[in-house]
Length: 333
Image 1 (tube, rainbow, N blue to C red):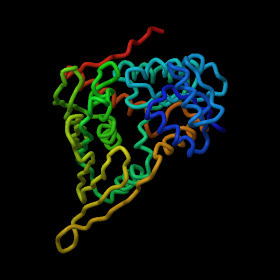
Image 2: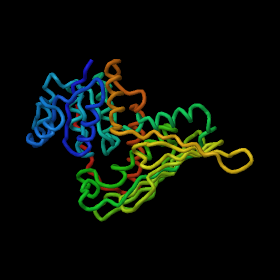
Image 3: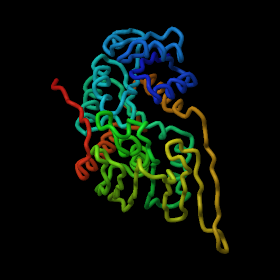
Image 4: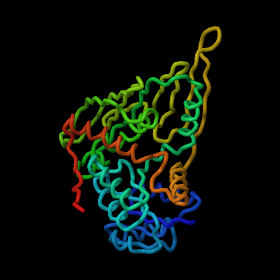
């Protein structure tokens, strides 16, 4: 099958995913929706000759060529078009974070389940060759039992990057950057037993930086952080009983990792694994195409449980710090 994609939103991430779609077998861009139809037309012209531009999401959803919808609006505006698409019977890929509240994320996933329609959060890092190789290494037992994770992601966000500073469009470091360190922790360890939070807010009420401490019944723990006011390595390291593994910067693109283990006679044995790729979102799109071809209504890799856990960690941080957010309105029925 060939999946006809309709994009909602025409910003930077939509451009990145559209370029990746051109390289992902099994799919094509057939429609674009934006509040300004001229922007949709320009986006369509840049990426797919013949793709239909729309100034209204519902009009796009009525297009029979649209099989799946990618929602790439700002964070608080994910829920409404994603829900409309699910109700229209269209498969949905929602940019991360899926929403800015646990209630809205749960609503989307419940709607997808009730309607029997595919829905997945666009945690693209999970599908990159570097992440796949890292998980295979861990699952093989080659580094022993994994007990800890340290991961960070951050940089100074200038005022021109309004998405970081404005609560109305999901501002703050947590919503924008947090899916990467928190997503890695959830991928490694599953649902946490406890989440503790510290952080600092900007005058606008969004978070400037957040530190999270998570632990699991298995005995594993994670120290995670995000910031929009300082430079960080934006990398991770994993602590295991027989080795430690450094995940290279930048954390989102998972370009590779280095395994450090004790060497015979002292010192350290270092093994570098290079998995850098270009246009990495294509692996996520290929996975969605495979899921749809198999008739799946959810991904076995970025599962509904993953998205609920990510939303729950963020909800805990929002409540603990008093972060200002433009929470979604959940319509009844």
